[in-house]
Image (tube, rainbow, N blue to C red; front, side, top):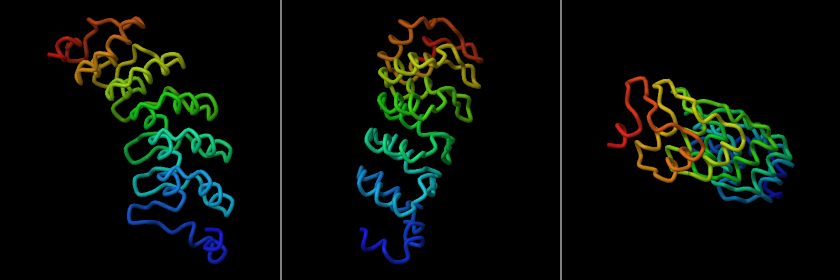
Length: 194
């Protein structure tokens, strides 16, 4: 790889696949920290976005690759860049059930745990949607508010009920969520579950 990068380095580092992935995105997909290190040493931009608007950190967070995420911290990758679907690396970690990545992003990167998507969903909504009780617990410990509705008035318990995630519902109830709180359309979690 070093031999390939010895000529036309800048052009090669900017070259993309059909979906806009650079060599650094591919290294993140392959979970190859050493390759990522070489590419960054040669000047790869760690915050370059692909066709989906994702950086290599988005990919590492979605994959749950702790070593890669920690490496990107050492080279000051941004954890606040949003992709084409309005998601940060933190959203992707919550969506894919990677509680340890949530911890790293919150503690090391100081990534915001209060980010919302376009529909007003919090990280707790995202963890609830995907059924990741461990992520919900981690987010709660980090300070994500339990009682935050999205734009439709749905709280995390409504989201979990819609998708039948009993473990999440149990976790939320144990943390003090109310089962009878209605959405903007006056639906409770029970109405939604039925």
